Image (tube, rainbow, N blue to C red; front, side):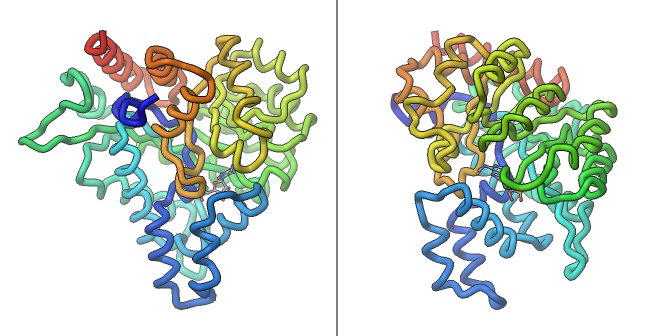
Length: 364
Ligand code: 6MZ
């Protein structure tokens, strides 16, 4: 499959971690400028490394967070990440990030998310719609035949919906997790649509997060869980009992879990490169994408951490096409089906459906 075609096709991204999607060039720049504990010559090779184990990935996140956790940098990377996704024709981005508290620099979870929102507002090279119930956002695509031939004053402009998920890190306490859920509820009018549970899958207990996740669900927030990223059958069982609106990864699923997953129809966010690099699957040709795809289970291709894994969503589609023998029509339908699993409201969904339909007509 030609990469150019994968780039030109409209796509939705539902599993992207803000700090994992940082540009490598920005990370190198931040590391070089850092005057504190970090010695650039020691971290440069870590940043540009291609292969990383799951343990190394989480060490990398500690390094990234050291360099990015101040308000201005959070704003900057948010802006860049949205620009990068929009530039490859992602038309709907659900960006997830863990609100961080850092008393020494006056950062609260709230001020962290405000810095993210400032980043969304500061994007000027593409049209970003992130506030719900805003007439402009509801019709972001309605008048466009295709995204790639849109011209505004002679300059091609990309358009993208962005919604936010606030992540609970598995290292957090029940109280900290509840604080994140309360914050998400208070920020719904600013485009926060749900909660994600993520972080090092080898750390923490399901019972710690459950009260916060149940509260989120009761209050009508959408919930997605990193599920089965490492072998932990008891946790997978409990997560399936919880019945989240989506799950991420689903790599280490025993037969019983596979059966329950398929009958539950819970959509799965599939991150091919991430799974292969972290050895959550032994190799691409045995990836569970194939079994789920053949069973017509709801799936969405996603990047996870485009910066950390040197990928982008177009590349993930190309990998799927090349590895599993899918053609353009199948790729397009896979992308289009993603719209059905977004957490944004029905107005956005309808606008995206219409947009994909108009692109499909042009392709005929
Ligand atoms: C689990 C992951 C992850 O939130 O600081 N994160 N959690 N599995 C993964 N697969 C490789 N990739 C990223 O973005 C970085 C954080 O997202 C979670 C981790 O908690 C990581 O620290 P934010 O923007």
